[in-house]
Length: 306
Image (spheres, rainbow, N blue to C red):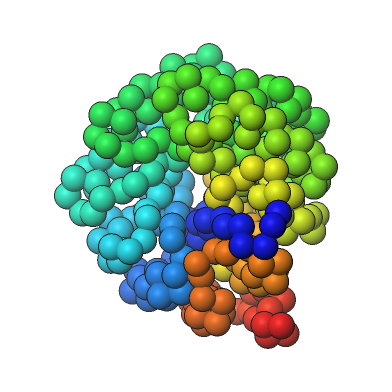
């Protein structure tokens, strides 16, 4: 990666970061955090998910959060079924434009069944209809190829199977393709191989890297992905993250995301442009800690910027 290269970041704290947080976070606090993220120059935010409030109560105020999103922010949401897509379209038409709607598709069929109660054949049929509905409304579908580097149920995952799912989505017209390391099983070598292959197969796609940091390789994996063709990287202020208890599949411990503050500090140190004000991002990270009521995992929040 040459100095002056550029990558886009998506901040995921408001959805993937807090979706499993045990205490409901007041909407006004989410909005304060959202505005601080925008003030730091973050270009995209994973704002909410349209899922059952019974399963994920933290997302019950999604419409109110979207209504407060500054116009400067590119907004992504998550939907896992047709009802979620209907809510996404309704919000897009009545609240504010939604640029992207992501839908997960596990490479591991066992994980897909455990997470979404659907096998691969049914998942293809359901998701194809979801994508068509989104495209008809001018919302870009995002295919989340998850368990792309390993599965907590099946173990090793064939990278060719991950690329095949990506190819299926690409053939449907999807140009936003995420490869997700659901429980932190990736390493820089496997990341470089998968993203390098995907960059050759899908040269006009926005390839999105989404890593969890369970085993301490998150930032190294993100850097490897960028060097191999990823154009967007997901990260979370303070490194929060975890599946809602209703779907966590018996996993133990915090399934935290890559830490936004630390990743941006590393990228800026390498001369890679993000368009983000690192000092303002630290202030947003401090607001994130105030929001959840405890210190989080960012190293640069403690040590300061170099």
